[in-house]
Length: 324
Image 1 (tube, rainbow, N blue to C red):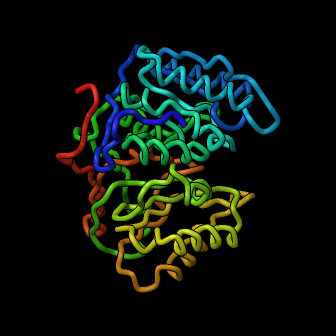
Image 2 (cartoon, helix red, strand yellow):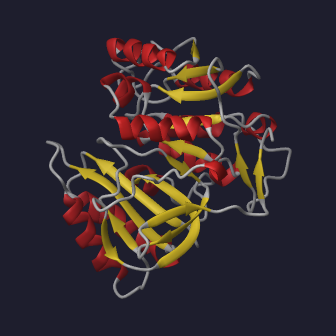
């Protein structure tokens, strides 16, 4: 890992500036290899949104279950992070592989020039690392050769575009928090939104790339994990002390191998593990490997209130909005 010469204040929130029509965005495959046709369609969709696109030099490489060699994927990512013309980085797909890059990422470049990063699934590992080491707010949302290529519904596209183009203080990123969301336990809580794909969050435990989860609002989702593995991973979070320190939990989609809804199982396991701990719990929040998929500002402080059915972005004196 390239050592940080600047001291990354663990209390700082580094919010990248919004992008606008005509800005240049980079597309990187940091994990698994994208399907070529979906990749091309996703890039066309981003261009139709008004953005210019620069492909990573190795975007279309393939090495078994990886999108090229580690050095190639890391080179693409670091070159985008260092390029001042690139104002956002969109990830092609998930799969597996970004964890192999974490020790070689140019974190100094992120502190020098914070920019929007959009992705989810395997990209969770990168998002957690950037939050832990730099305080960078990233965006957990659709990916190029996935939901963007396949076609976003109106709610998902509006949520993504708001996240990309509007400062958090001027918008309600959770305007679709409605009656479809199940309130498992009621209450009010404030904290930074931290989490992502459950399997990646648990994989980072015990590493320098894992953030402090204490006093956060933990959001979790996953796909293709049977109930016993969901149980094992949530139990790992419990044994690591994560579930004892969070202010609230938000469960997105949990989908099985055949697309079956495993949220009832995830709810049951979570309730069993946290016992009588009186924290708010939401389930069936529209985020994850299905549509609608709200884009979540990973790392921003929010206030959750189940009575008013609202999640509101908070401003903090310690927040730092890069670029003004």
